[in-house]
Length: 238
Ligand code: NI
Ligand code: MN
Image (cartoon, rainbow, N blue to C red):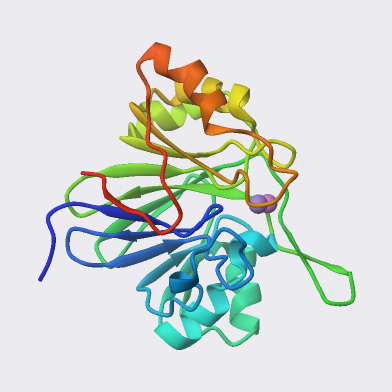
């Protein structure tokens, strides 16, 4: 049975499971088993159709390989991340780069800029270069568009993302230290002109100190709706 709207389930940190109107399961930045914010019931999630990876840091790429191998998911990420996963035995990847779009399972995925780094720290401490960090605009079968910023600082060209794709919901990091904090995320909301924001990448670890309350205080007076999710909660987006 297919549903008519896009649903979003927060898996904690920057991990989300989106289910499309046609029932396609899209997991963005899977970080589950070792994610202190991921509910127990989702730690062993193994079924996804598409896995979108914003960059190669562990807290975003952790379960991409497992989901691809056990669930048969197609992994979409920047070229270097996909090449690295392919070398680790992931059979279905579709590497891309910033500014480009591709349609997979009827869902249009556009890769955007992000101000962040991207490298995987190996067990011996060495770092494998994995291209650059990115974000995604995802357009579902019913035309609903969301923007998942990945890890990023605020950048002026978020205005371009707003102009070109007009996302109805923006998923923005607010934890500070490694990404934007609430002040910068509020500026991002202004640039994107998104009517609704879902805060992410906060509270998972003590260093991620940004709060939803701080974001609310800055953006609600300007008419932006803050959709605060609890890990494990599912909401219908539209
Ligand atoms: Ni990162
Ligand atoms: Mn991160």
